[in-house]
Length: 447
Ligand SMILES: Cc1ncc(COP(=O)(O)O)c(C=O)c1O
Image (cartoon, rainbow, N blue to C red):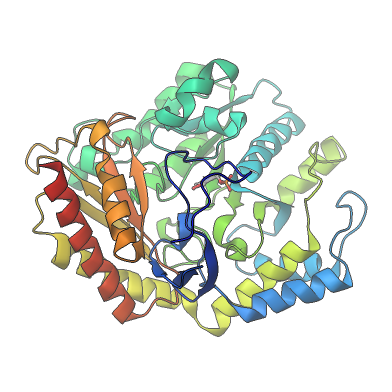
C-alpha cells in the first residue's frame, strides 16, 4: 500500500502512515494500489452525496473559469445570490440570511460574535457569556475549544482561553443525573435555567448545542421534550439559541436540519460539512432577517471578517450539492435507509458482549463499546478499543469514524456509522457484517 510517512507534510496522527487515495466514486474510495474502501462515515460525516459526483465538479469548474474569487466585503456574485435563494427555502428560520465561511469552527465563532453583537444592539451589553454542554464538539480553534466539551482536546490549551460555562448533555445511556429516560423530568435541560441564574440574569448571550450530539459522545438523540424545554428557558431569560448543525445539517438525520425533528426554531444555525459535500470547504452561519436588521440599525455592519468568506466557487459547489440531493431525493433516502441501518446494527451486533449501546437517527448511528455489559464499565483508555475496531475494519475494507472519552473525557469508546446517502442496501449489509467481524477481532486481541 503506498504510504508517505516521511514527506514534507505533517499530519495529525503521527503514529501511522497514510494510504494515498487516488479517486472516489459513490461510497467507495480507491487507493493508489487499487485497494478499495467502503466509506461508511463519509470521512467525519462530510461526504453526504458520495464521492466523484461530476455535476458538482463541473459546476465548480464553470464558476472558477467565470470568476473564482471576489472580495466579499465589496462584491457579490450571481452564484452566491442564487444559492442563498435556494437555501432560504430549506432553512427553518423566518426570513433567513446567510454569512459564508470556510470551516465549521469559523462559523461557530461567527455565530457567537453575531449573538454578542445582537445582544449589544438590543441594549444588553452585559451579555457576554455563551453556555455550552459537556460532551459537545464545536471546533478546534481556541474560541470553539472553550465551548466544546471534549476534555482530551481542551486540556493542553485551557490556560489560553476564557472557558465557557458548561451544562450536562442529554446522554441517556449514561445519564449524568442517574435518571431513567422514560420519565426523567429532563434534569439536563433544567440545568440550563440553573446555570443562567448562577451566572446572573442579563449575563448570558447565548446557549449553543448540537441538536443530535455528534462526534464527542456519538449520535446521542435527546429525549422528547428536551429541545422545547431548552427553547422555553432561552426565551424566558432572553438567551439566544444557537443550533450547531455542522454535522447534522443537510439531511444527515433524515430531515434537512435536525432541529426540524424536535419542533423548535433556533435563533442562529451553523452548518458546514455536508453543505458542499466535501467538494469545497464551506460553512454557513444562518440567522433571522429581523436580527440582521437590528444589527444594521444598531451598528451599521456585522463586525467580522474572513478573506475567503462568501466564495463564488463554494456557492456553485453548494448549489450543485442541493441539486443532487433534490434530484435524487436523497434526504428521504437517508431517512429510510437510516431506519434500516439501525435495525441491522441491532440485529447483527446486539449479541456481542462488547457492544453496550446502539443509537442514532437518520443516517447517523453510533455503537458504544463496553468491557462489561451489565455494569457498562468501559475498556481502559489505553486499550484504544474503538481505534482497534476501526483499524481492523479498514484492513477489511470499511471505514468508520472512532470516538473516545464518552465516560469521563478519557475513557469510553464508540464509533460512528454514517455513510453517504447514496449507499445501497447491499453496501449497508457489508458495512454491518464487517463491523461485527472487526469488533470480534478487536475483542479477541484485547483478551
Ligand atoms: C457539531 C460540530 N461543530 C463544529 C465542528 C467544527 O468543524 P470544523 O472541523 O470544520 O472546524 C464540528 C466538526 O466535527 C462539529 O461536528
